[in-house]
Length: 239
Image (tube, rainbow, N blue to C red; front, top):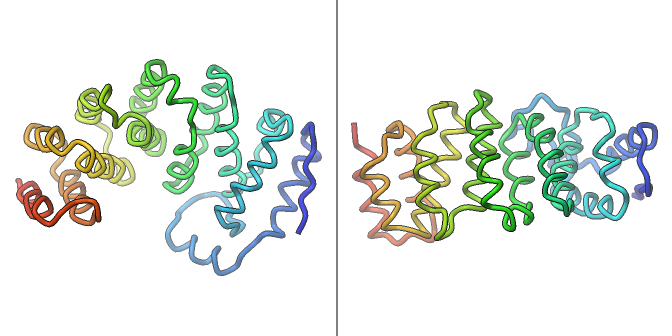
């Protein structure tokens, strides 16, 4: 299976390229994904490793011209676009394309797989925190989840851990995939900053269901010892 990559992209060669991605369909993988990923986008069934290879090859072209083409509404197409953002070197340009991308996300898989690869954020944490707050202030489930995932992926560090707790404590929007992302963040923070996380759990005003989700994730973690797994059970039964 061969894909044709172009140095410059226009709508015609873009559409041809996207259609040719169907050659990489894996039926078993497609059927598996349909059971765990719920999306309005048509799924081709291309494995994530292959998607990343495709994005890497695209990055060798003028890939912003690829990103400027009209979107055809395939799951893998959106994932490729999201991963491509990791190759943008200019911060302002990155944010411009990121806003367009985040607005298209409608499922946890695209959100979590694409957003974890943006090293440019590490160099611009102080600026990007404002973009996160912007995402968290919306009433759209996967834009808010994106904001939480950005905190999880890039801000669980000494300089920002206290601010992260303040931010998630102030999130008022409730939706399943947002709640799960917050619980996931708390479970990872427990591994990295146990004492601070316990202090947070003792004082947070987050909904008790989110806390119960977080406790379960902490207990499921292979990086938490049995003593601490038993200790956090007390939070699971708070009314």
